[in-house]
Amino acid sequence: MTEIVVLVTPHFNLAATMAFLDPFRAANYLAGRQMFRWRIASTNAQLCRASNGFEIAVEKLESQRQLRADILLVSSSWTPEAFADEKLLSAIRRCARTGSYVGGIDTGAFILAEAGLLNGRRATVHYEHIDGFAEKFPQVDACEDLFVNEGNIGTCCGGAAAGEFAMLLLRDLVGDALTNDCAKYLFYSSVRGPGAHQTDVHLEPLGNTAPPKVRKAIEIMERNLETPVSVPDLCRLAGISQRQLNRLFREYVKTSPQLYYRDIRLDRARGLVTQTELPISEIALASGFSSPVHFARAYKARFGVAASRDRIEGRVPFEFRAWPMYRRGDLGK
Image (cartoon, rainbow, N blue to C red; front, side):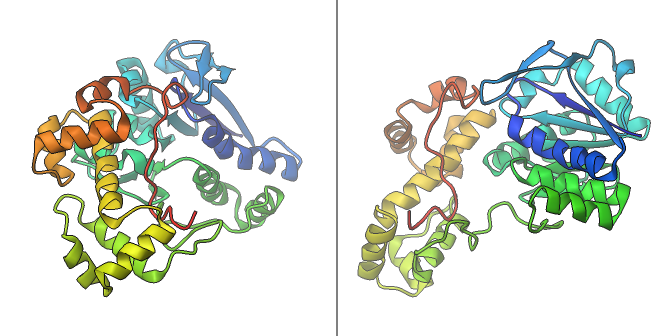
């Protein structure tokens, strides 16, 4: 029987964690026997609060020697570094040394990297945390893939992709036939493979009415966050007149190109403010603001709080404090 242990930290994403476990539950049911067994554990308490506010009962991991698993999954979300104590890191390292497959979902890669398991490897986290992850762990090749599976180590961005990540692991354990049955049983019409990107600008599940020229202009903006291009240069690169671009942005994006460009740079800045220790002045430059005063005013106007204060207050779970987040391709709504 394959033993699965899910190590959760406070504020973990409950939906992503259950999405990971569900294919193994389906495999047991469809095979008519218990092929997989799982338990959820934590080093912090016997009740763990998820990011949506629900509390679930967990086994308290008193000693790393308790941790015996064929698959060890680390599930974390907000402020993973706050919970990466030596007890947790030692338990993870021990599992990796003794042959367990070790994975991380959502921000679990932060903890695996802290344990030293990702040095020289590719890894992924939720796109909201990519900049912070790359800054904190330069020895890791951070990417925006849905999941990365290399040998006995894997990482996944979380969300619905956690179920697809589990499907790929399941296929290696039970083969194509049962895995396909599980996918059909759980209504996965397809399972995206390795190399699939988190933020495919051409994929809008509910449709997108934005014209190609608007999409092109936004792609150019996204590639030039640190050194913004002027609006005339943007129009030249996108092959559109400034008057036409202004009109299309007003119609489809509900704002001007200048304000949209400023806001996506501020959203990048917010990720760096709340998820790294970079000086605020460096974050301003990395987000395309040459003037610290201009950056401070724009940041407070957009988020209602100064960057220095946000660095402290922004590191709390989403259910306690929410803010508008930029999403690539959020057009035509």
